[in-house]
Image (cartoon, rainbow, N blue to C red; front, side):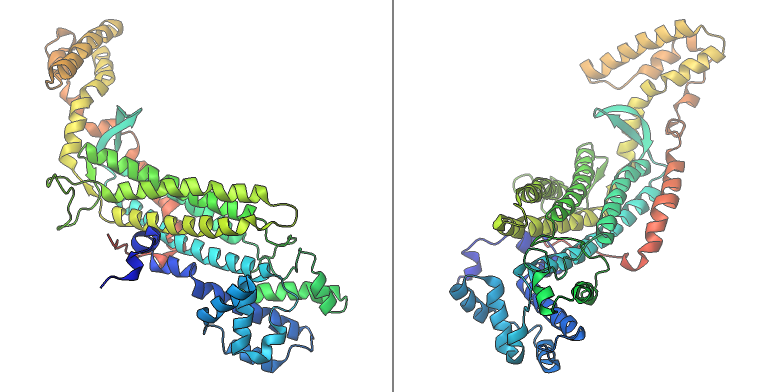
Length: 479
């Protein structure tokens, strides 16, 4: 028997990628339950400030029905009223009939919509913060473990000098630390819209409190406090500024860029057989080529990261398109852009955490790659040793140049091993040079190992201490 859910489109963010925890944040249950809590907070504050039309009995009835939402009934109301907020006001009034006369008193639809968005985005940012902290912790652990393993460093994707696998991991890690700082800044500076009225003037609340400006300001503050916000938007139109959405979207895009960079690097290293993402015992790499170990996790992460980076432009357009105090062309776009940006960012961080928890390194392959290129990189040290032994700097420089070109020809044109060291050893100009002593990879990595230690101590240790309770997340992917 066919399941109807397979007959219509469902977002892969729901069925394959994003966590249940993040999905629930953007679900109808939490959204409408938050609306009801906002209506309760508004009524409580109005009662506390002396509005006699709000009674304790009404508040008690509202408190008793914050989560028992009849979505079918609300749908019936919305088909009739063509207004989602009014539909849920009526549905709430059905289960709290005493409170029906004062639900949404003095408020505009954006009182519940905007404030709920802020509550949801704050929690979503907190979830992403936890994911980031764990990615940072895993990368730092990996960097410490691989602090001394010399490997080729690349510029222009051409072998340059040597670094260590651990030092490279600190570069990835630092980008995620920058993302964490951006999320922390946004969390610290989120402004609650509050109770500002229809166009942000608070005119309706001023009328309710008979012109008492202090009570109107107190109402705004009390609602924010009841909903857990310390910061309150000083001014708004009908909505909070859509620049807030745009700024948050750019933070998500920054996370996506960091994920894309890391996962692309791992894909390139997998091609070189130096490093791989985890590969499970029964995992199939290719339906045709059974031997393959495709980097499917990193490929998926880069694919979704591109989506986040692309969709992050949409909230910027929305912010720019808002006319005066508000226009409704933000709503439909915002429902898609912000929710899916968060869901996709959640997905790519889960993938990244899964990958960093199981990175596989192949030291022998890395050492072979180093050995193939190190003779070229060591020529400067060999030159210095020859001069110290009494040779003419310009003469040995020319001899090294000629031998290097010849060795490069053997590698590139004939597919033979790099024989530069043999050529130099056979040249009398280098008879007094201990060439083998100049070929230790550890002598070519600079301060890479020490930089790893210093980075972990200065940048990662404070994060681990601050977010100790968030560490230890596991990322088990669905597919």
